Image 1: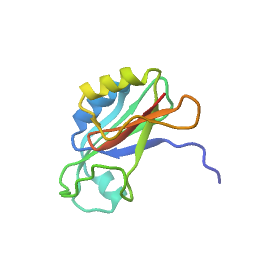
Image 2: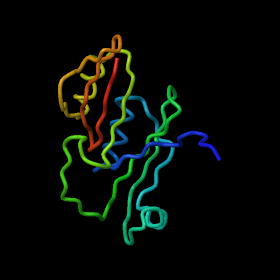
Image 3: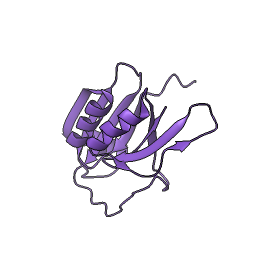
Length: 141
């Protein structure tokens, strides 16, 4: 048995509508699926009784990957994660044609800058890290 492909990447968000709006307006992702107040399926997948979520999947015409956003409705989490240094945290890296323009756009949409633009030895590779709705986003040029 072999892996055929990855179907989607999933991120927990604080507000599903803000997450959808950000990915739509920043990167052109379009909503392909949304269900509010999902109970049975999320309880089955997580093994957590009485949990409810709002879930959305989005796709961009320039990319085959699906981004899934999940807002857990009745789960209290007092942990504030500001940086991607904790086990289980993740990030997504977008390749953009103009890093400065994209940064200006996402900051206007509410993204928070975490560090400085960092250049790597790979030719013309520069990375920026920011977060929106609890998801670390990395942009590269």
